[in-house]
Amino acid sequence: MAKIAVIKIRGTVSARGDAIDTLRMLNLKRKNVMVLLEKNDEALGMLAMVKDYVAYGDIDESFEKMLKEKRPIEYEKGFFRLHPPKGGFESKGIKKPYSIGGALGYRKSEIAALIKKMM
Image 1 (cartoon, rainbow, N blue to C red):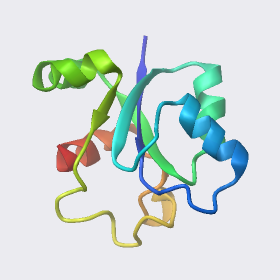
Image 2 (image 1 turned 90 degrees about the horizontal axis):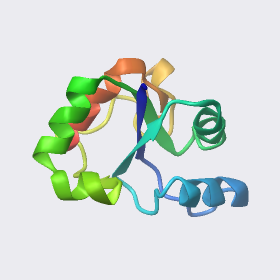
Image 3 (image 1 turned 90 degrees about the vertical axis):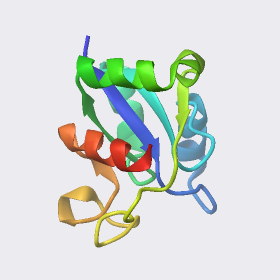
């Protein structure tokens, strides 16, 4: 089954309460933390609620296998601690959606490039 990589980009100071609860349910407690989720309706609904705080996209099996080989302990824990991206985020920063040049929201398969910048 397809997987989705979710990275928490923004902090939750002055965030909505339901968004904070959803981020906790997704096991995203700190910035620059990534989790892998199964692609299903429940996960997509949760991601729609927190799209202003995370970047997410589809990853293929080969990329997931590479993550498992590079960081096996974190893979077993269920979350990956990442560095801030080398070279920074996109030109509009972390407050704008990816569709207009920012870093947040759905990135399709472009999420792999961001993960590589953050590893």
